[in-house]
Image (spheres, one colour):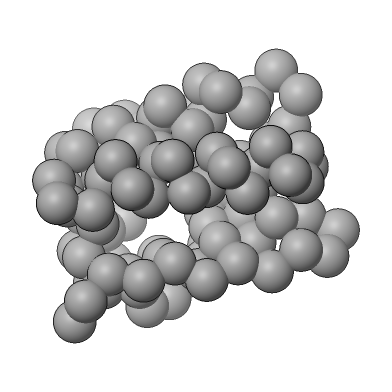
Length: 101
């Protein structure tokens, strides 16, 4: 599946990444999310329902986004598949990000 990003602005900036967030997509993902955030500086919610895979560069992009917004806004991740949630647990990133169901 090709990587895609969709977004929706309501009371937060909701990001819907789909496909694989890997070394080939991470820079574009990071830049696009931060551009959307600059236009709509509010809490960010990542909906991972259609995210199939994330590698270390994808995690790095999420950390960069988090560090760019955490002073003013929250970052939450929801609808995380078990294999991706396990990666957050192993790397202890589940303590950095609010991860919901």
